[in-house]
Image 1 (cartoon, rainbow, N blue to C red):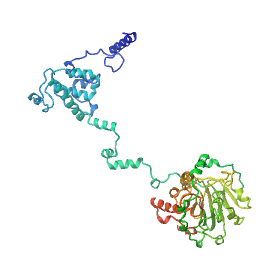
Image 2: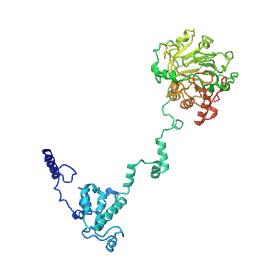
Image 3: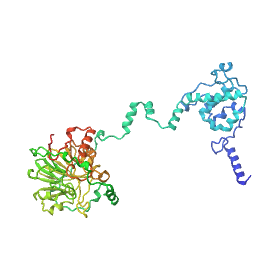
Image 4: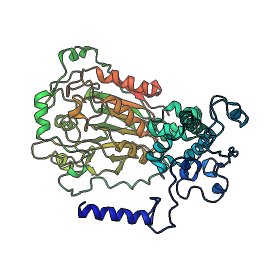
Length: 536
């Protein structure tokens, strides 16, 4: 024997002397002599494990402790000697109360009691395989058979009487709980209530915001000279495309619809008509095409992103004519610009306006107008406002960007406009935007929007345009986020800016509106040149 093995053996002997039960390493009372052979079965404590049979349990070994369900089992028959087992099903067994064909009168009842103790206190681990093997070798064949039957029956009764939940706990431990299990356990109604509590809440079912209303700032002076930081890159919602995105677009992108997508151009809605006659207290809208609207509000005539040109830089000619002839316009009182992209800021159209027209533009864009000798140019940052003729113009954020030349990326801001008259009637003009968090914030800051003018086109390929252009479904969701009472689609059926079929935006926005459960009359899907009057 090596020195290491001797040391290990000596340490094991010392540990056995200090803690013969194996339950700890501290000093304790001397261990009782280990029973062997038949004596092991005559002593129930051999199955109980250290400390498991103290107190009341030791006084009455056949009572179930409160830990196993809080009630006590009736006392088992006295444990008889196992030296003279009775045959299974004998009269002696029946007189002792055993079920016919199950346990013997002597060794079987003794095994039954031992099995009860083992089931309650987990003594199979304490006795160990060696003790069980030694015990199983004792006695005659009938005794061993009675012992095995007694153990099985006792464990089965212990499962039912001592720990009724043990099997259910085991089921939960080894397999996931299904919805059917939960329904049986707590009832379908409770389960449904729990589902409602933990599942994501749909926006149309969400509780109203509890935030207090926002006090809007006072309007800024018209034509106020201001100095702005350059550029506004910190206002971007998402990074601009990089070299890899442009390389992918060159490989697989598409700038125009396929021929089958262009076949519906003759079907595009175009119904020009005269502008409605309204008074100062009535709001009326006329769609001239793309993002160009003629808004009559508070007695003013306001143009949004006016583009009356037949062709703009970088795109083919218009696929529908302008919905309102320039000569048919009443005197224009104000113009709002959302950003400087060519399909929203058209120099030939701007040149037609009188130079004293009130122009409201994003921060950083005023210089462009002043160079063209406009004298009433008001630049605003997000959440700022100005007022003219009793109508308030609030500039609000959008998920977009700006660029007009190679070296002016995001040198001016971008956004939308909220127009409010003295009666509180509100029109929201989104300009050009992707979908995002700004809509709910705008809706909270400007509650009661009567109609939202939202873009629904120029969205394909989606991976390329998602961050800057809404698709029809997102536009419907944006209208809900805004809390708008009505929605008027725009930014489609005018210029070929992307790859979706020309009629697809209208079809999809109608389907999305219906799927959202919104009233059909609140979707103002106007033809180019069409008008609606706000009836509040």
